[in-house]
Image (tube, rainbow, N blue to C red; front, side, top):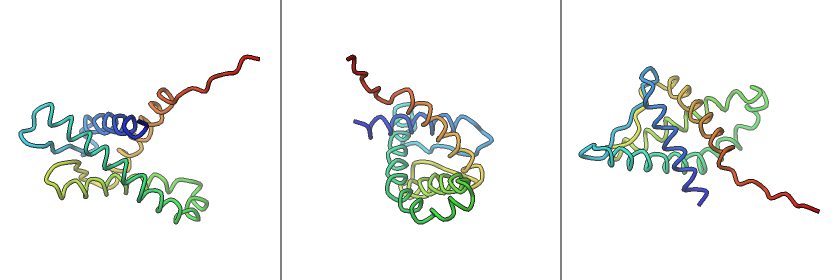
Length: 133
């Protein structure tokens, strides 16, 4: 269930990023490109992005621990941008998916996606029940 919520939130965040023209991030939907195909493409891209973040992102973050320490965590911006670019590269092989024209705008887009995910994560996180003694 958590994965599905994560995918939906990622899809929304990616959709928001595609609405900002300066970022040069876009979605190439399934044929024929109607609203349903755009939504399904966003969900598919979000699922791939979640998997890339979970599998490849975790490995990169573990290997890059010394860089995190040296840069006081700023390397995470580059890593997140790389993971977004990698998702675009993977989905472009299918003829649909995410398009990131510039790596640096991809880094900015990844930061915006992270902010949206953090906001929705805080809202949708299950609250712990307080015990009344």
